[in-house]
Each structure stands twice: as C-alpha cells, then as structure tokens.
Amino acid sequence: MIPVILSGGSGTRLWPLSRGQHPKQFLSLVSNHTMLQETVLRLQGIEDLKAPIGVCNENHRFMMAEQLREINTPPTAIILEPIGKNTAPAVALSALAAESEEDILLILPADHVIADIASFQAAVKNAKSLAKEGNLVTFGIVPTAAETGYGYIKRGAQNTGVAYDVAAFVEKPNHDTALQYIESGEYFWNSGMFAFKAGRYLEELEKYNPDMLAACRESFATAQVDADFIRLDKAVFSQCPADSIDYAVMEKTNKAVVIPLAAEWNDVGSWSALWDVTEKDESGNAITGDVLTVDTENSYLYSSSRLIAAVGASNLVIVETPDAIMVAPKDRVQEVKSIVDQLKQQQRSEADLHRKVYRPWGYYDSVDQGDRHLTKRIVVKPGAKLSLQKHHHRTEHWIVVKGTALVTKADEQMLLTENESTYIPLGVVHCLENPGIIPLEMIEVQSGSYLGEDDIIRFEDKYGRT
Image (tube, rainbow, N blue to C red; front, side):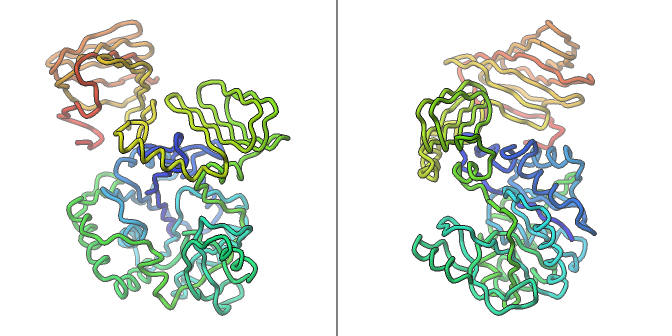
C-alpha cells in the first residue's frame, strides 16, 4: 500500500494563519507537528506500507520535502502541479507513478484531524482487503451533527461485514435536508479519503473520463524528474480536464464501497472547526500564545507575536499574526474567505505571504518597510546557498549577526563573520552562502525605487528555481 498525500488546498478560511504560499496543511495547528506530518505519522504501525507519494503545488515543493524529511519519511516521489486541476488528475498521476498497477493507493488529504488513530488504522486495514478484490473504497464519516458544509454518501446494500455498496454521492445539503439524512441513519459525511489498486483506478478513469487519463499520461510522460520531484510541464498539464475524484469516477463506477469510520474526524475547514478540536480552558476558550482574558468564554484566541487582551468576549475568533489581526463571531468565520478575496483584488501581499517567508535555503522576516527601504532578518541553513542573482531597482547592505557568510560579489569572494558587513550595488551579480555548521543570521537593508520580490534575475540556483 502506498499512501498518497494530497496537498493542493489553499485553506483560505483559516486566514490569516493559512495563506496562499503557506497553507494550513503546512502549519502546526493541533499539535507540535504540521497537519501534513500528522497525516503521515498516523500511518505508523500499518503493515507493508511503501514510501508515500506527495502531490502539491509547485510553489510548495520545498515545504513538503522538508516536512517529510523532518519526520524521517523520504517520499517515493513528489508530483508538482503547475496549476490545480482538482483531485481526479492528482490521483491518476499518482497511480502512474506507482511501481505496479497492483499497488494499493491510500488517498489522504493532508489537512485532516483524526483523533482515534486505532479506529482509523482498523478501517485502513479493512479497506486494503476490499481494494485487493478490485473495489474502489471510500471512507464515510459517521456523522455527529447535521453539517451543511460536507458532502454526504448514501449507503446501499451491505457489501461485507465492514462495508456497504455506495448508493449515491450527495451534494452539501441545507440544514433541514441534513437533519433528514442524520435521522435516516443511511448517510455518512464524505471524507475525501479512498483506497484502490492503482490499475483499477486507471481502468475506471479510462472508462468514464478517457480525455483526462490521456492528458495525465501525456503529462507524466513529458514530466522532468529532479531528485524526488516530478515536474509536470505547465503547457501540457493545462490541457487536462479538471474534476474531483467523486465526479470523475466514484459517482459512476459500480465498484464503489464505503467503510463507516467513527474516528473523531475533522477536516478543519474553518476557525470554528479548529476550536472544536482544540483543548479548552474551564471557560470554553481555546488559547494559543500570549493571551489574557477577563469574562471571556467559548472563544478561539491565537497570538503568534503580540499580547491579545480580551474582555467580555463571547463566541469570538481572534487571530493575531505579525502583519494582520482577524476578529469574527464563531458562527461567521466561513466569511473570512471574503477578506482573502478583497486582498487579492487589491493585490495585497497578505493574501499569499506571511511577514516571515520560508525558502528552500531558510527564511526571511521583513521587520520594517518604508517607501524606499525594506529591512529583513535572513536565516540561512548550514550548507544552503541563495541563487546567483542581480537586481535592477535596489541595492543591499548585509550585516552578519551570527555565523559565517560566503559572499560572491561580481568576480570577488569574501568570508564575513559576526559584526562584519558588505554592500551590494545596483545591478551587481551576487550570491550568499552559509559554509558553516550553524545557521547564518544576518540583517539585510534594501533601498531603491522598487523592492518587490520579482526584481530578481537568477543566473544559477541549486534548487531549480527560474
């Protein structure tokens, strides 16, 4: 069995923590591990598991690779999507990347919370047996409330002692319809998790959506392999139809079965959902970070850098990051997506980037900015190297705070240590590298007429960025 970790979501409803370039699956929201890492770690103890296949946006490739490395789980491959095409093509590409068509793919979104690991693993074991027989298995969450934010699966006849035939996939209902579903006992929440043989999925996709399969085969055949990364050609992959696995295959096949799963599952699709799964104090408050409260109850309070003081708050969500504060009633947090839409319309960086931005070589934190200056704190991992580059619109001053910097400036190379500095004039080709064994920390002061990140002309880059 090969776990396939789908990590293409943007998580806009968890803004300002989740952003386009750092979405929720890469965040530590419910434990010390990120949601992606938790997805992999809950598989520990399942027999005969192969290394996972990851599928993610090309811009997130280094985060996925680094987070898998941190939990000592080297992947079979990480498939990089230049554009999102929903889950059906992502799964098809994973099936094509499997060693054998007999391999069973366990399809897992990277952003779910599952508290009852034993029940989850038991369901996976049952799914494996059913998949070996040629079934396409989905996991139906035993509902605990009349949720209107989930799709539903209607069960049919009992297939085995642990599964039912799928009678129908149902769209997100209104509240009254959801209540009828719950009262009938015939419906499950659609989890978006599946298990089937790689070859069986490809057979069914060819039967019901041959154009998609043909586009995926061409995309896979023309992809470039770079270490663990499978880089799809954007022009080729853009021709692939976009659809979910539910619509493309599962609603049409006559081999779909559903395994009921009661494992304290939550897809953490909103701040109120995160409040549900987070430990609370005696007043019902879920608190993270530097927070003080007076007469405050049933609220979610998250501080990442500054003190939050809440007085008389009830049923609120308050989330603070270094560059944004979001406040909303718990029953209106789904509307946070509208704020993200406004940010995008105004072309504001807060839609996609945090103040601290992670790169394959480390990260930078923009600590101060004015009309013609920008100050960053830069941390470079040992052995890491920024690209050889130049800028058309800005100069840079570098001051080493900790560690050692190997600086290339035009035809000159120099070593800088703590409290030493250098100046990069406009248009000069330059590079920064950490040759040491501890992180390099430095302050960069940029000045010029334009300070955007797109003012970078790269000549060489060890991470394959253009």
